[in-house]
Length: 555
Image (cartoon, rainbow, N blue to C red; front, side, top):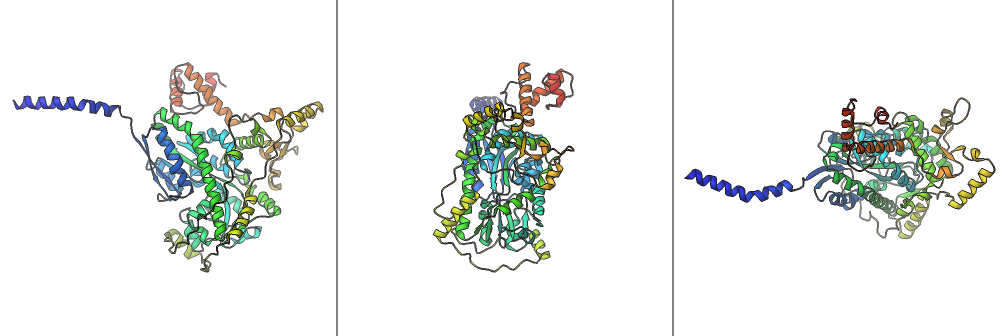
């Protein structure tokens, strides 16, 4: 009797639990990513993570992807983030050049000194070359979720205005962005002090260093501005950052979520960058109101900076990135600068998308500096003990009067605004082409000229035996924008992108691939390639190679 009652009770419970279990089985899977960033909570980049990135990711994944974000460097420096992503403790990170260099050295090409003239060029190159850099990251088992800006970095110092080359020899300059930054700082006569981002504020406060090159957001967010006397407005280099996730975490998401994220990515990326640029401008203005003196270099000083720092261009080409990548970037910028941007369809480039924000009414740094200084890390204390710090006179920074601050900020805005590029009108271009053809001078009009003349040491390297300049190494610019040059250049990595699409089309026709033809070598593409290789008795790699392209009749 008891046995019968037990069986009856069990059947009733199973009957009642059936719908609940069925509903649980149908419920979508929940995903969780742990994400770390150096950005302090409530400042600049961190605000854009909260207000832009996370809501978009939540919407794209129907609320089934949760992000646990660690702000303010609590997870260490960038190298710590990369290590933790490799072992699965983190699934993603907001990386500066320090972290991206550990994954893709090719990405560091974007920080070459004087590569970009302004944000409009950065935005255009990001539009056409995001797939290229995403490819490099995926080769190292990461996904480049977004290519974001830090800023055009500026020099800050407690002692030197850096309007004279001699100041670089005298200053103790912190460096945390890697070998390229250290190389061009040495070309300026400096002896850079390599140190992690987390330890750098204490190093400046203790006198271990007196200068640094960084963004205004970092200078304000770390409170280092309270000891800063000068900011030099020379925009020597653009500093990219990146939001990355591990390839395993990315590929764990359903394809529908991946597609939804990638559809939202361009808009979120633009929103993120516009927001951080506004914060960077506001931070600079706030520091000037606080009393930091803005310094504008003479034309002669700017030419000297270009001459010295650009010596590193050929030094790292062929080591950290291939020559073809540099050629592609130069070709795209050449096309853009000669009027190619006029033919872009349906997209306003950064000149319209990134208006200069109005002057802020209240300073971001109006509150007095903190009375307590964060404890100095052991590593910095040990270094400070070996290098006797320069005594710092304790004095309260003088707050600039509002009228004087507005005048200084107006000068800063004029100093850092990029010179407008001379873009020929389409009609003028056509008229010029006809004149050139009529005069039989097309060949002469297409002769290359150096856009940014390399110093003599570089020019000597890029000349062939016959004395002519090697166009692939001298960074040429066409003299005239002709019909042929107005078309977007079909560069090496663009061809690679087209090859991927061609492979996807072949696989789709064979029933081995059923997703969108998008040029993204994702897991479905690699699975289809592996099945194709198996069917045709080829070595199974799942990767696009010259042998695969040849076997498919693509190459």
